[in-house]
Amino acid sequence: GKCFVYSSGLMDHMCVCESGNSKGWYKKNGHFNGTLDAFVKIIKIEGIKSLWSGLPPTLIMSLPTTVIYFTCYDQLSEALKSRLGKDNDHIPIVAGSLSRFGSVTVVSPLELIRTRMQYRKLSYKQLHMCISSKVARDGWLSLWRGWSSTVLRDVPFSAMYWYNYERFKKMMCKNLGAHEPTFFIAFTSGAASGSIAAVITLPFDVVKTHRQTELWESETLKIPQSASTWAVMRKIVTKNGIAGLFAGIGPRLFKVAPACAIMISTYEYGKSFFSHLNEKSN
Image 1 (cartoon, rainbow, N blue to C red):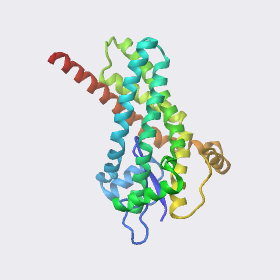
Image 2 (cartoon, one colour):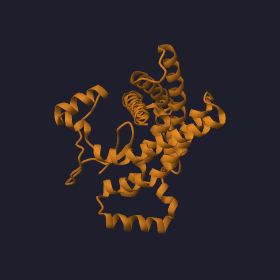
Image 3 (cartoon, rainbow, N blue to C red):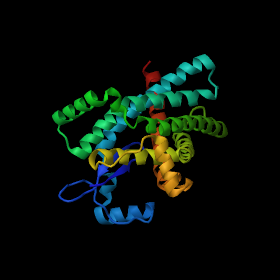
Image 4 (tube, one colour):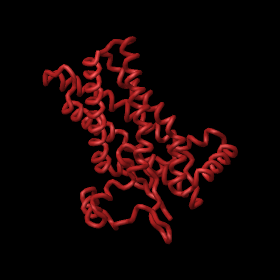
């Protein structure tokens, strides 16, 4: 009856482990001795397709988040460039922070609703009644529960990511003599900037994971939940020391670096492709 967090590199999902007569999509494979060992055991026992388990809920949440995030970043960047100048170093930080803040705020209630549907198997009618009673009892702000820990992780991540990405991109374009970023430049810059941001914001990622599992346990197993993000952080440090805040640094880099690289390189390539297509049609 316990739960775990499934993370794709772009989104986090609360999943219920198979217990008793319940039929969860996840089946425990035993103890893993690391990321590579987990890959080998999962493929050996369940087949290579199982590595893409949970793809539908990932897409459902990732698509609106990414659309809002990248659209806001582009629009804010252009607006700031017209006011502050094209080469201002603060533009990526401000645009990245605000766009991520906006996307997290908009999608946060959807994440809460999706999590409830996932572990309680509610129909849409039951879900509506559940959300209505929660709003009537705790107010509209209750739909943004867990928002603060997400913001603490994602906003600093985005600020560092976009700042480093723009710097690496300019540097590589200059060194390679390219007028605009190629797929390789965007991919490399995305992977490097994503890795740096992932390491620095890892403590907040660990806290968010703890808060997600505590939220689930408090509502289903009636286990008391810590009062705040900082309370969770103190609890982790007391139990495991400062090193506890950096638990899972290997798997986080292993997922975030390629996720950032693939997303930004395909995005840049798509922008360039449609820009040239529009020029030809005009």
